[in-house]
Amino acid sequence: MEHKRAYDFLYKKSLELNFNQFANHIKKVGPLNIRTSNMKFVDHLSKIIVGQQLSVKSAAAIWKRTELILKDNKYKKINEKLNKKFKEAGLSRQKIGYLNGIIFNKELIKITKKQLKKMPADDLYEFLIKIKGIGPWSIEMSRIFYLGDPDVFSYLDLGLKNAHIKMFSSKKYNTSFYELFSPFRSYMCLYMWRTLEEENVTI
Image 1 (cartoon, rainbow, N blue to C red):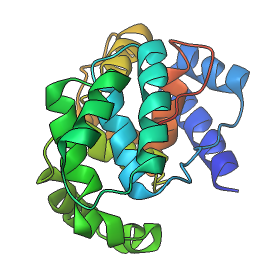
Image 2: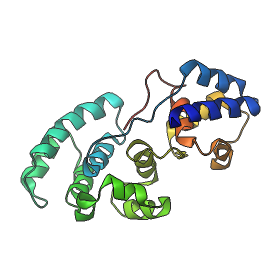
Image 3: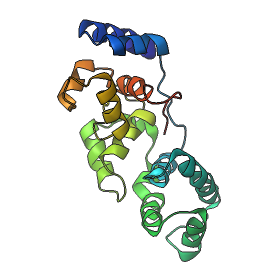
């Protein structure tokens, strides 16, 4: 099982590099699974947009209302009635614009998870980065929590930066450092997030 191989690898690697505090943390937490989303890709990206720059609690509440609107959406193009519903759900004008750019994107609507998984990382990045509201962090979260890619490190994630200071303060925070933990850097992210909170992170 991949998650058990990741656990063994990261635990042994941490001991090998004398990161005993982190090794003890991994041992205490035990094997972690990457919990991937079963949503349609359009809905997954929409949820990311809704949650940007919000607390977990606020994002969950607004997404709950937005998800109901998306499920009932019968419109084929951008329109004011739908925008009004999004606004009433708590979305800003900017986020409404981003959401429209996603839910009416014909390429995104048609693409399957199988097709996305077959895309090389660079191609996936180029495919998604052109969509307004979707940046490098969103793409990395999609690779981890939608596609289940085991080897992604999200350098831009603030939580990971804080966890690095907590666990590896003597080492510079950069992507080169985390190459040491390939091919299980996504699992590395899970363990690092868990140094900051009790529950596993999911998107």
